[in-house]
Image (cartoon, rainbow, N blue to C red; front, side):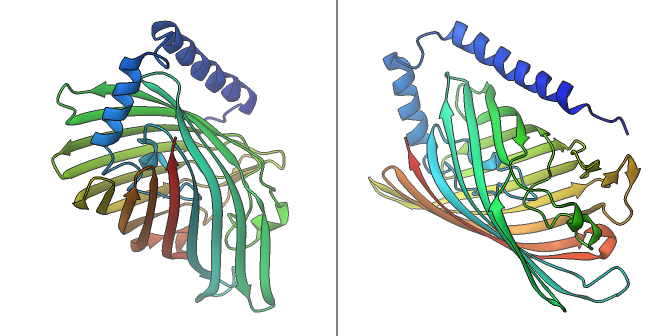
Length: 326
């Protein structure tokens, strides 16, 4: 596998985001202030109000959050919980150790031009694993994320929409080298590395129904401790249906699948055994909105799980968010 130079990658990502931003500002110099853009945002908000952030895809470990980036503009808070069961150590066969990953994050998306938006998130993590020697807890700030989202295509009927994203993860969370010696090296507050993400989202929407297809790929680099987590590919298919609405409120439901594929971790360039894997989840959720506020939740249960060569089993995920439209 080709090794990625973090500094070179970081400069390339920043240059690309700034280049796209400069071109859009040049082409739409006054778009943030003219009535045409404001009317379009209001129309888009009404048209997509049923779907905006109804997906609530978790932005923590194991997902990109790209599903939740189709709001015109918002700021909010999300809680995301994950439960795994792992081997107590590398010499046992039974999965007896419960591990809980919890994240509270501030996130938001702000439009820069008609087609370009900037998304960002800042998480606070508090994780726990129950060992035979006692509970182990870690807590603190996690890795921040920033992404530029560009509208590639929108049909005249508004039935079809294609968005692309490019972004990076900033290593603010603590990486503990001792943590990689356990069954789950991902029991960390952060990766300690600059990681980069490419994302693509397609949406079909007509009347009360919508279908959203998302995929993203995260390129993870080597941190200062010479440890590199494996690259990650996510794919999501979600159907949405508006169940009820009145003048000020909307209630919607969703049903879908989410898959994740993890490459091998590496240390000093050497592949670490039993670190690759994959999982497939079914998910069910809802969102209720009132004027500019929206509240949503999602439950995910594994249909298939083969993580860390079978040493780790995914059990469940749950998320709850509240957003405010700007």
